Image (cartoon, rainbow, N blue to C red):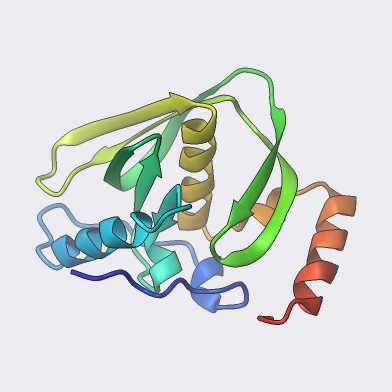
Length: 163
């Protein structure tokens, strides 16, 4: 299909809890194609449907050469001690801030045919799974920053040329 424009901080769709996808919904095939095309752009680890303006629970990922998608993902496991990692977001362009994330994450969902699938990983994959699942719950990564870092992040965002 096509690479879609990424919605930017301030767009209400980014703060809206996404609706579940009904298994077998044929209209979702085009969405998944667009998510896959959108995540293949160099430098992208994940794209949630809300980031391209669609309020449905699906995201694509592109980590270590592995590209795929998941529909109706649910984080079923996180493991390890929370670690402070530098994190950015396509919807908050140009900024990276330290954020706590678990070093391991596992999500379960379905594919386009309704088959149950599981994604799991450590490092960047764990971070991407948590980040994209947050998007589907209407949360941006800056929402999870500690109070002082969030205050500074919001100041920088307000002063950015795209805000």
